Image (cartoon, rainbow, N blue to C red):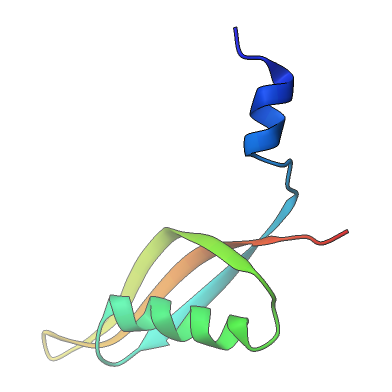
Length: 79
């Protein structure tokens, strides 16, 4: 059994908000993720994590011409 006093001193309770974003790129799915996070970082403080929900893309003449990646982004809510 973990002593609550000990565990609380190591890690405070946090509340996070989670939103969904779609990043795009002509280069790669990684760049699409980076583009979404970079833009979100302009208006959202303390982005802590992301998870990929969906990968999509546009194909023309058998080649990928555009990447779309849907991500969920979590950020800390301050008191």
